[in-house]
Image (cartoon, rainbow, N blue to C red; front, side):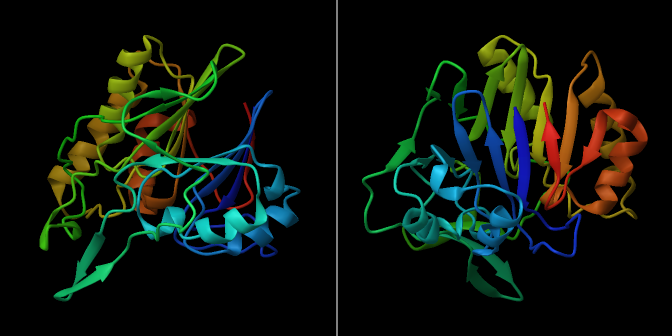
Length: 272
């Protein structure tokens, strides 16, 4: 399995474009998969420079309904004429961020043509090796973002991220979890899906949504120390962090996780 980062906050080369968002190209033995599309269309030029033919993608998975993971959908559907697109049935709901008293839309637009769009409500196998998981129980996080909201019947309320789904690929005795932002807590997500699939992950790739970490908050630092230890306890998994994990939180986790944790950026290539 090969994983190429087409879009992430950082980059490994000045020849590539980076932005706050995520897009991963995944090549398995049987399918070519795109996991998220980033916040704009810059993933397209990055794909070309990295040798990825977007027209050849078989499956697109959008992890949740925020612009930094799905804004490129309209353009992708023009470039690619065959891929099936999977996302939560709640992905096109109204999502907002409150900033200085303003409610800023951060959702993604629903395409007019839904012919290739498949809405995920329950866990679903795409192939015997590729599965999507949904409905992980929401757990409020010690390090979170209270500014993320949803609008339900005209009322703003805290987003519980019902629109978040997760991709799992099992191939060659490897079990790989892909999580876009892990709003429900990366530890919680791992434990819940491992329980459902009755197998441990060998690799975890994605954002851990810890970028709001405040080092001066001792409770948050203690939490990160505990999280790092818990993630590698009784586990031989390899973790690849990116996007919304945040540099300071990554550094704290790295102290506990050492070689079990690495960072990926735009242009990173993993052979799993």
